[in-house]
Length: 86
Image (cartoon, rainbow, N blue to C red; front, side):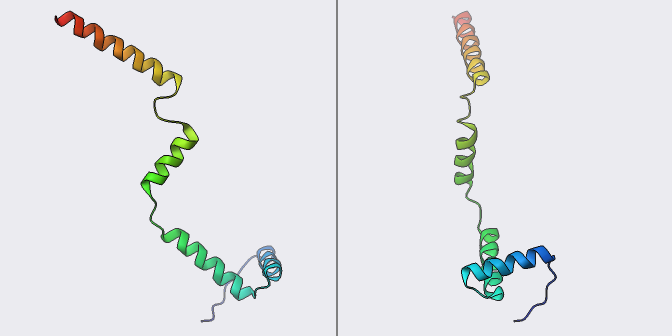
């Protein structure tokens, strides 16, 4: 199927240069790029992979100093309240 599109001159030149480097036609390069783009966009995100990536970047929840201090204070309050009931 033939399609006419408008591209900025610099993008068109970059596409042509890339196609020459890869020994592809301009149409072949654009078709491959479009297929890859559509495939990435259609993939359903994996929630576990997203969570693992977030943990990798930011660390495990509760590992930061403020969280650790809050956990210690909370445990102390719970222990103290348990002693009063007896």
